[in-house]
Image (cartoon, rainbow, N blue to C red; front, top):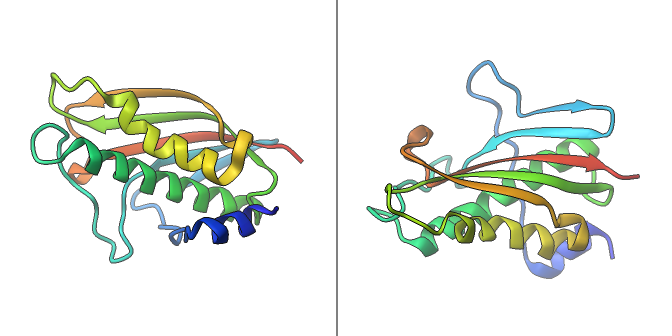
Length: 152
């Protein structure tokens, strides 16, 4: 089954690509590697899912934000290759906007990781880091970047 068909079967619609706001680019490609800039949980109306986990954002809300970031990662990847059928996620780095005593950063990041595996199967499995941050741009709940390989 193609990844496009898999997305349809799961009822997942990927968001449009958002142009970079500053002097960075959404991705860099070298040989068969794609480095995707940090993706934030942006909604279709251009607003963000905001809040600090443990203060004004629940664990479940943060996990859903991570899932949305995963959708943005997939959108950028598709914009580079034209299809998600020939990519494999190598590394995901997640930053969680959280209070100092929050301990479940890795579980928040499962929102993204599980999405990637749902959509791509084993090609969605990846190495991962999950860290807590005192703040993130625009007070977003999560920001996630990735390294992807083109496998075919």
